[in-house]
Image 1 (spheres, rainbow over the protein chains, first blue to last red):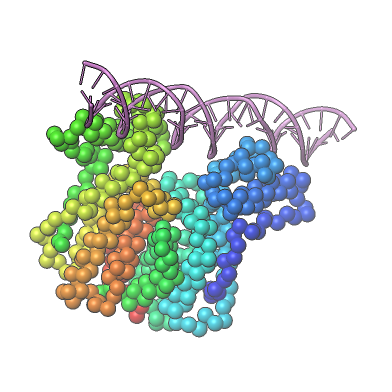
Image 2 (tube, helix red, strand yellow):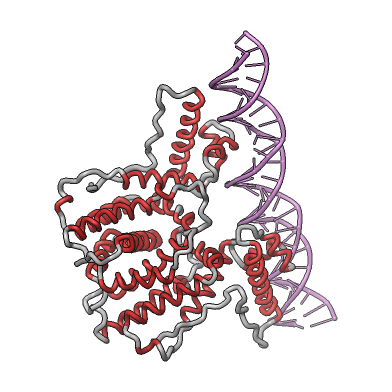
Length: 222
Length: 222
DNA sequence: GGTCATAAATGACCAGGGTCATATTTAAAG
DNA sequence: CTTTAAATATGACCCTGGTCATTTATGACC
């Protein structure tokens, strides 16, 4: 598996599920409704923020009854999970990048995470919104949530690949537990993201990540 | 500054604010009421969980009107923040530990974090509850929240001390940015905590932390 | 086209968090 | 002891997320 620095564009301007011709009217309508809820809520969230948008507004704007909303999304919060999954999709759909493929492992990981960081930096408010999803990470795991589709899971998977390649190339200690190392990188990445989201002043998320990867590779101990 | 492994005992069996004799009747009553809310809600949370406890129940049990609750705590969630602050207090009130003080820096940090981890492991449900507080970390910072009292801030402060001592003793690279290193340790610690809280199977939080500190000290790179 | 089982839509309804105008208590001054 | 202003307590009320019994739309089968 090889990677590309991709453009995490416009989560909210998405990406409706595609209708196919051989679908029944029912299935088509269902998809249409779900898409409409998705689009309308994205629009409203952008305009007025998540907390200030009510289900009533969403359903009114989408031209459906309130109850119908809950046929498609179990809770208001769950909408965010869907947005987050969309973003995760972008991490997963990685393809080759001719420039990056020849960099040393450390630089590749750095470039990968820094690019991710930069994409988040472009829209702090949207990022805040998406990461409320983190809460779910904490609460009692609900069965309906697919772990494999979470951004966390996917990021770790990519890092794991990079580390294993690094070991093969002799750029990463063969003795380390790659799962643990990937998790650690992920931890630092997400924690820095959180701190950045919380911060008032504009410290640079991507620059911070850059420095921390150096630290992780070289170690703290003398 | 030196450290002790302390007993993070019983957050919910706390630790009321002390009334003093020279207080006016008003002040005494105020403190009494706040304490009662605190105690009653702790009791109810333990019995039925946070979500299943209503403000009505708390106020009824505490013998006050609903509105009064909101004179003391701005939201229901904010109660958890107070519980978390109590826990943070325990991190802050560190004193000497004769055994630990002579260990090498890496071992001291390890022992410190592992002990913390173990104290959380003793009550997973309570820990889950407290860390819903993490959510606030993400949302728009409210002015009333005192950063210095948060567990995160305090943990970093302690780690910073330990790292600086480590540099003096030549056990930690003098070239590193201690703030960044402390933040990284903190990140790994909290992220592992989160993953553990989320996990169904009982992987050992403290053992995981143990291994990850080795990784951080020795570095990933070859 | 008509019948019927089932999927989907509906909106009245409820519960619980949070507000606020009003009532009560306290403390200080005269 | 009264008066008065400020602090505190109160609960009726509002808002919004979420439920559910009922209605409506769909499509398989005849």
